[in-house]
Length: 323
Ligand code: ADP
Ligand code: MG
Image 1 (cartoon, rainbow, N blue to C red):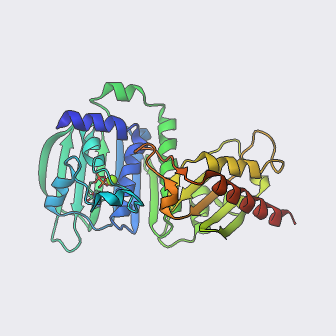
Image 2 (cartoon, rainbow, N blue to C red):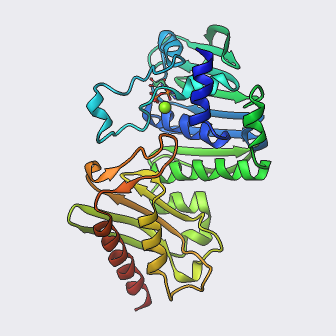
């Protein structure tokens, strides 16, 4: 049902970067060890996400394009303490309803691949294709048939920046996976599989940042915080390099960002922001996900405790640095 897909697309697919987010998450779920993302024109003329993961059979490829055809929830209770990233089974049909969508995939061990082409929700063809093991999704003409959506897109520069930020986040969360990102045919970064977090940061954010970091690793009462924060001399004019991951998923969370900014108070000038790549690990039951399905906001059940732990850990790391 085309209308339901378009409505769902409104919820899930706000902008080109939302497509990249959904497809990169699928590639990670598919066990890829290499993911390549290419886009043109802020993602509006082309996005290609290609992986070497498990791929799909002919039947699975068709099924994947039906609403709620997720292969990822076994039981409803899996929704608590969820570990795979996708669970709604509506990303692919939503994307295909508002773009020209080509899916090419070849399942592990299969003799050949399958190609499905959908334009604005209308099936154009399904046929065999040559394909290495894995999945390639090519999206063009995003929102061409949905002028109301297209109108809300920002400039090419802004939409590109959202895509870049999105791929950076997943690249940091998964240094075990090789990532490459191309904008209009130009490589923005390339990082091999099985990188250390530090070298991944260097490849994705540049050496200037990677060479000015303080390592963080502390645990307390089932909470662990690890990663890197910038030396105070590395302060930035924007918050774009304050990155947080909870149980290895990129998140937006005020408790953590306030704790970070507060810890740097007095260390960096007013109006400047620290750099941080911080990973908090804890029992998933202590986190409320799903504040909004397509967003990354999360809340901690024990807000004060989490905040206290974060501030103590960060102050300690900064103190160690200035001694
Ligand atoms: P969800 O991720 O919530 O299950 P999606 O619409 O994103 O829903 O994907 C539907 C299904 O298509 C997935 O459950 C998975 O079985 C299959 N799929 C999607 N992307 C890939 C991929 N890159 N590799 C292998 N299978 C995929
Ligand atoms: Mg998904």
